Length: 126
Image (cartoon, rainbow, N blue to C red; front, side):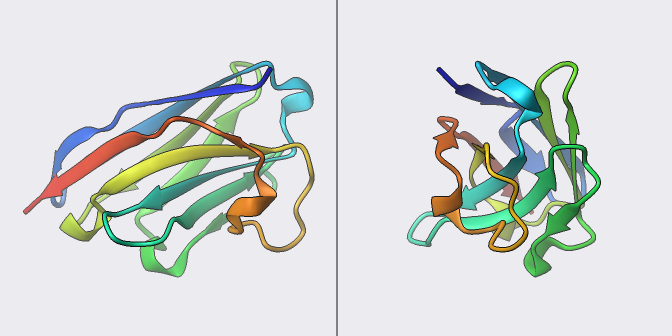
């Protein structure tokens, strides 16, 4: 059974930095694609970063481009998200997601990811 557990959320100051981690278990083969999504109150869940199994392909959403770095360590079964210069509008619940299917397109479509963590709250204050 696949389990994803996020950590690293909490409060951050605008302009600082933040690092989120996701520990995966029961996930064989390194996992074809993994991603970070976020959902702010009253808004739809949106994909912010995605990464292929060997990290040869990474994607970040336009809304956060240049401020997010996604990485993974398959030996440790972990996924990370480093956020530089967070803004108050980055306040949201952040979710780790995983797929066993290699995604050539639609890597920010939530329904392509059958496995989800419980989420970690990030609150950025100005």
